[in-house]
Image (tube, rainbow, N blue to C red; front, side, top):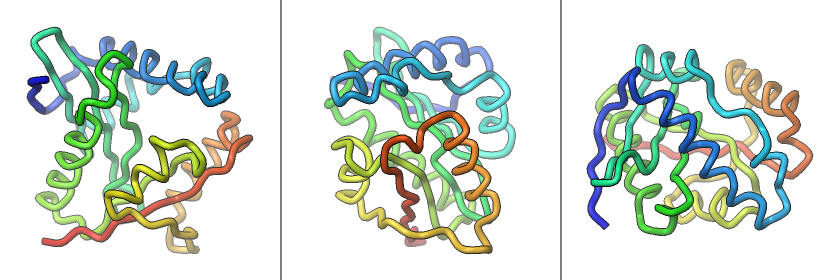
Length: 171
């Protein structure tokens, strides 16, 4: 499968919202229907990535296959969202988007990248561990990450075990 990764643009946002909704349907297979039925990132969240972080898009000849949205959080790059449309999953696109996100973070001067994810879903924490992400407990210096976790809890995501993860970025 051939695809390219490029910077996302405001015009992409409606398609990215559809991609995220489609990608979330895979959670039904593991009984996490609340993910499949939940809200997707809104326009302002994507614009925040474009303006203050990064929005990177994977595109095939058939259109947008996936994206990664990164925000600065507590002095680190933070993977706010990673989504690959179901028909494009398990083809290396998610891994390529993570690699591109890490490259962006390094180039932007970040020494660490963080994320929050489910602990027991194969394509969540177990997958990130294969990419050298490690579970960690946010401390008092991680106020913005604590706010992200509180927002996730308010949206019902903590009905299943979640973890914060981090990876040190080599320069």
